[in-house]
Structure formats: structure tokens, C-alpha cells
Image (cartoon, rainbow, N blue to C red; front, top):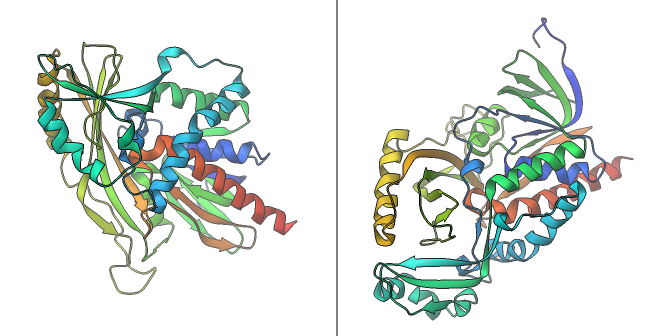
Amino acid sequence: MNSHFEAHREDFIVVGGGLAGLTTAIALARKNIPVKIIYDHSDPLAATQACHGISTIKGILESDAALFGLKLLGHRGFSAWLSEIEGLLGVKRPEAAWSEGVAERFPNRQDFQKDIGWIYRKDFMGAKQVVLRTEQTENYVEAYYPGDWWIDPEYLIRILQEAAKKLGVVTQDAVVKNISNSKTMFTITLSTGEAVTAKTVILCGGASIVRLMDMAGVHKYDWFAVSGYTYKAAYDALETCLVKRTSGLTSKAGTLHWGAASETAIPLTSTSGGQGSGTQMLVKRVRTGEEEAKIAEFHLHKFMSHLSLEDFKNVQVRWGARVRNRSRSPAIDCVKVIPEGGLWINAGYYKSGVILSWMFAEELAQKITSVEDGRL
């Protein structure tokens, strides 16, 4: 430990202030567990700020798969959970922040049938709710999904930040430079020159999650990470909510989003043969930010040409990494155990974050509470 500063002692630290970090901190705080969030507010790759805000049950193709079952539960319970959070603050959700039903626009009926016709053959529950609006306009045909919804991501993050503050969660703006542990304590070294110690640390780092896991010495052969990108552009067009393909194009109140995952999954394993030794556990961006912006422009322009919308501007690229276990579910696990606490992972939502993060946060808080009760 650097002799120029004294480590601050905290019991519970959450690393990451996006959807996963905020929901985790809130879930713990509601169980009267004091929490501190460490989060780099200047991170230009914060994927949460560009998330779609769309929950589409039409994307749940395999109802018997664990991950898709979780998505369906998250979809059904999200509104009630958010209402509880809003109740804590005494605020009423503005109408502009929530839309029931999602419209998906296709250039023509043939494109629609090609893209989702095979879903019907899977006897998929969500597809049975689709209403195809047969009136062909000059530029598109529209399918409507009454069971889907949209939440304004900026509103959601603001409400979660306010709820965390009201519940006593402390936030520190800093970059985590190192994570080490003794027999009884974790020490987190920060870019501010400080160090913070804690008995329990939960990593919810989004784009930084693999780097955080690497410095903490977490090497799991049954996990893998997939990098993904979300693009956000400003434009002047209709006040509508729409989604194109399962990767998603959404527009609302002057912004347009498009998301995509890279083609490669990177195993979280040791490169030198021995678990926990000599690793290079990095999720590399397969393209530069400039290359990603060009891809975004191509897809966004192509989509907007179908709707005769004005040109957009200010394309922003957001990068994240989702950590999965073998069942493809997000990772939630205690990966290091010490007598007084442990190091936990709660990450890996990417585009499903809106409907999954609160569920996994509640589950993690319950697990940690059970462990803490067992120590009493």
C-alpha cells in the first residue's frame, strides 16, 4: 500500500455505476446494507447511456432455455419494480418516459416475412401477438407488438441515481487501478491516489469488466465474454418508438440507436495453462471507433431512407462486454471467498440490461444477505 495515503474502510463496494451497478447498490441498500459505488463518470464508452430501452418478448425464441425464461420474467416484472423505486422517491413516471407497444417497420411485406416468418414456424409465443398493419405506405409496412414496451434510458438512469442517493449509497468518481486481497480484506487502488478497503466487492464494470476481473485474478474456464457496440445518433424526425431486427434500431424524441455484437466470443481462461497464472484476459475491440462509426452510419442511413427521415448527426459509439456462463445467462457468482466477505461478479447484460439487471441485483442481494446472516 502506498505510504502517502491511508486506505478508507468500507464494508461493501460496487465497482461500476451503470444499470448493473446501480441496481445492485439499490438492492443491497434496501436490505440496510451500506454501499459505496466507484464509477468513472468520464468514461466515453459507457454503454448504459446509449442502451435501447426496449423490451421485446418477440426476441424470446426458445421458451425452454434458461436465459430466455429469465428475460420473460424480467419483462413481466420490470414495470412493478420500477414503480417501487419511483415510490421511494415520490415521483410519478412521465408519460413521455414509457411507451406500451413497439412498432417495427419493414420496407415491404416480403422483407417482413423473410425476417420473422421463421419465428412463427417455431411456434413462438411472442410472435402470436404480432399485428401486421397491412396498409402499405410509400416507404414501409409496419408490424406492431402490443406486449413490448420502451423506457427512456436517460430517465431510468436518473431515477436509479436518485434512488441510490436517497438510500444512502455513496458514489466516488474514480478509475480502479488495482484490486488485491489479503486474508481478510480487499484493497482497491484508485486513480485519485487513494485506496479503499472492503470485505465485500461486487464487480459490475460493463466495458471494463474483463480488465477488472483480470487484475483481481479471476479466471473461470466456464465463462466467456462477447464484446458489443451500441450507436446513438441525433436526428430530426417523428416522435415514435420503433425497433428493427433483434439487434435493434430504436428512435424516440430525436435520437436513433443501433446495436451489434462482435462475431467472436473470448474465453476467460489462463493463456499459460495454469488457472490464475500469466493471463491476458482482455476483450479486444475488433474495430476502431472510427470504423464503428462508419458501420453505424451505413445502417442508420439505410434504415432512415425507408422512412424518408432527415439525415442524422453526432454519431456516438458505445462499447461494452457481456460475461456469460455456459447456459448463456449473465454471470452472478462469488469468485473469491475470504472469512469476512468475498469478491462477486454481477455483469454481462448488454442489450438485455433493462429487463435483467434488476432481477440479478435482487438475487445477488439475497445471496449476500444469506451469507451475512449466516455469519451472525
